Amino acid sequence: ALSGNRNWAPMWREPQPKPHYDVIIVGGGGHGLSTAYYLAKEFGITNVAVIEKGYLGGGNVGRNTTIIRSNYMLEGNEPFYELSMKLWEGLEQDFNYNAMVSQRGIVNLFHTDGQRDAYARRGNAMMMHGVAAELLDREQVRSMMPYLNFNHARFPILGGLLQKRGGTARHDAVAWGYGRGADERGVDLIQHCEVTGIRRDELGQVTGVETTKGFIGCNKLALATAGHTSVTGKMAGLDLPIETHVLQAFVSEGIKPVIDNVITYGAGHFYISQSDKGGLVFGADIDYYSSYAQRGNLATVEHTIEEGVSLIPGLSRVRVLRAWGGAMDMSMDGSPIIDRTPIDNLYLNCGWCYGGFKATPASGFCFAHLIAKNEAHPVARLLRLDRFERGFAVDEGGKGPQPN
Ligand code: FAD
Image 1 (tube, rainbow, N blue to C red):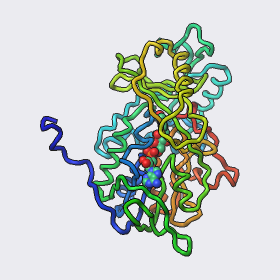
Image 2: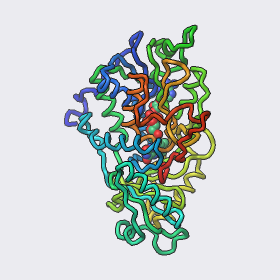
Image 3: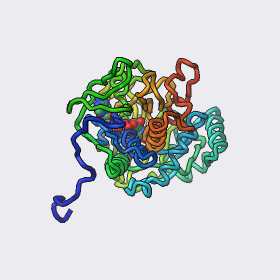
Image 4: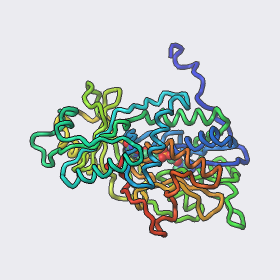
């Protein structure tokens, strides 16, 4: 910085694409980059390119509200998200980069007796998978978060489900750490290169991708394009169970430390935490129409702020600094897909809905396992593409107790 930022070494190379790779990953978001990193590190597969139409980390990985947690209930989800949490816990040492992983605890508030039962059940399911959870009563929540609305709330707070190991991480740094780690191991990170088509031979096998930098061949093609999965899937003739919607997020002006956990509001759908810079980071529902736009509708802004103020009345005194949107790959049961496709050498990673940031480490780890070995990692074995036609949905509403 003393040299006017002139002498900093680049974080990764800017290679020209080679004519052919063993593996091409489309999408330089969190999942594409972590997949490349684990392919190289865990499986020794380094003749790999990540092809990104914009810049690395410019998609959802750099636009989310950074919540990480493993408080899921179903067999198809909980072991997968717990693997992710364990990887988060060692991630900064592993890729030697400060991702500001902060296990500040997440509290999912409940507001009815029925909701308390559902959260108790979820907590029990977590504990049966060896994951700690605590059910807090109203007074325990009040002592932790006295600024919540305990007085005249339309939906009084009755308690909360606490996962102490949940928290937040610095989203851009996650992309940068994985990207740098993959580059150091020989992976080519090719930015500003859009995949415009998928070329297949007469047997239907993928031979490579058409891009804005020309044709690039590969033995295996892996799609990790999140909100654009239906578009890239269609390039290979796949009609996927994914709908794309905008999800908006907001950050306030910086204020003194007040919120030291992640909180989710169970009477509506609102979640909030405070960044290390002091901004309150929050969000709510998706915009309910399909769109690939990365900015949303004002009605959702109003809805989000209304929910926030009903939970934290003092929020009405804080000014919003920025808002943004991301294109979400909503699957039909709310759970992700990490699977092979009907095309032998085409692999699919999508369906992350509101919650793919927390999955970034396990998603990359399991997708790399699938690509390298042609078989599902044990914790991802239920996240199959054909589960919808077979009637084996992993129907957790994309959520856990809350969607993010
Ligand atoms: P992305 O970063 O979107 O990566 C996909 C990449 O593919 C993009 O960079 C895109 O440019 C590229 N691409 C697409 N098409 C092509 C093409 N044809 N050629 C080349 N490249 C292409 N999750 C949580 O767990 N916790 C949260 O708190 C949370 N909050 C969220 C809040 C918001 C506002 C949003 C938008 C998302 C949130 N999420 C959260 C979800 C999470 O961010 C996503 O599920 C996750 O980031 C998706 O995976 P990704 O990082 O690989 O996606």
